[in-house]
Length: 116
Image (tube, rainbow, N blue to C red; front, side, top):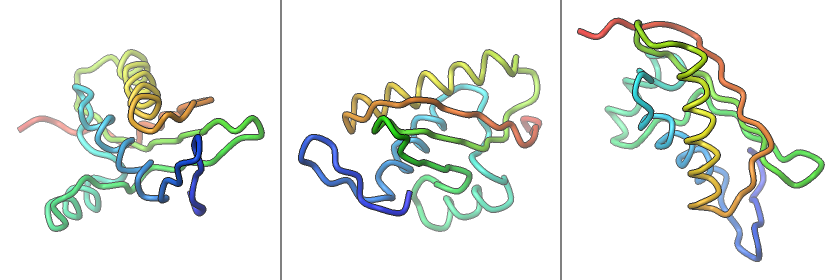
């Protein structure tokens, strides 16, 4: 998202949406990381905040938010169920915390990780 978003007279900075999405996604059981593990894991440890790499947002013609997230997941989870949980968690968090309606959440599973 490149521009400020205005929701009911409130301006929301570009990084705010990505942070809400990142926190919601990381709370879903089975999600190992957003974006590439090599970059997102190291970045979040050094920056002491959630990684927003692997998140794309844009407004559609109807004024709703379209979200795309790239994740790596832990081996052993049912991928369609995990993707459905991610979609629901992200849409609910954006609606609750920012008052933003979501038109779609596209989930891209870019890799598998094994728990240590």
